[in-house]
Image (cartoon, rainbow, N blue to C red):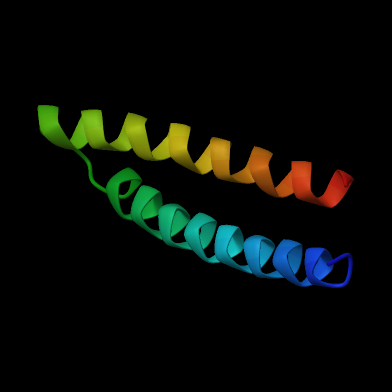
Length: 64
């Protein structure tokens, strides 16, 4: 069972990296707008929080 943990961590890290990249792209899209609607502003704040949480999770995996 010990051998599966590094694989699981590797898969988890890859998943988190993909998620972080997708969030980064969407944040950049919204940041490129001159004006955001109220819903876009809310979405942008949520995405930034999710992006940060994803990055924190990646760093947590790297520390293990």
